[in-house]
Image 1: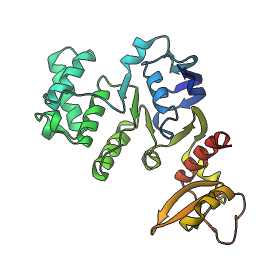
Image 2 (image 1 turned 135 degrees about the vertical axis):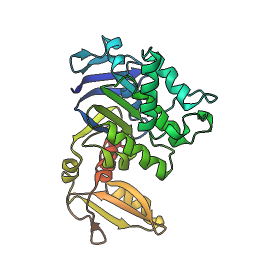
Image 3 (image 1 turned 60 degrees about the horizontal axis):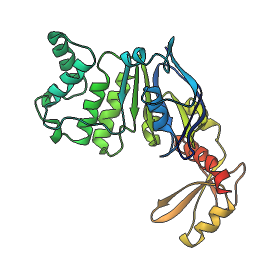
Length: 295
């Protein structure tokens, strides 16, 4: 089963264009949607999750028309938004039991079995009686994915799931997502390139409401091979370097700015070639999307 999005557009009151002609085919497995804050990722995720209407376009999950048959979609959808509320004075077990009831699992024995299995799957069984108000960020995210997995969904959407997590909790959550995404469609929407690089067999880069590039990460990286160059630049020369070259990113190395530049040929003798990675692809596409506005 694939999720097929065709020519989706959305403009908010005031003329803010969140999506413009977005088309994607998302197969079974982990799919990464990469983009900076404000790129339109959350608007796209909310639209797929039937929480808002687009101005135009279509979305199909297999044979289901997502925009016309919202009830059918919601039966097979699991959604973990960027921010979600929990009942802080209830235990993890009771919270999950409550959402299982809302999902239509009405028989108590079946519900108890499902809740126990999901708490085990998300490594929360040992704290099932603890109030969720005392949970760490990573524990809350894992409870959120347990809620999203209720009802054996065919499509799971997770929006910026690792933002704010410490490295240990982040890796635990990513391992959980990887196991979840083997047999269903899982969309990981994030601005954290490393999350996508570790998990996703397919990726799309979105910026300014438009899909800039989509494909297999290794293929996208191959497309810029031999075109990424780096150089350390004194802070006093940084502005001039940014004016003279197509700088896609700047970072500090031992306290000194290092620029990464996209160019078909070596920009100058002081530049050295860099073996590209998915982060370079991402920054190149984001900077290219911003270029018309800058000009």
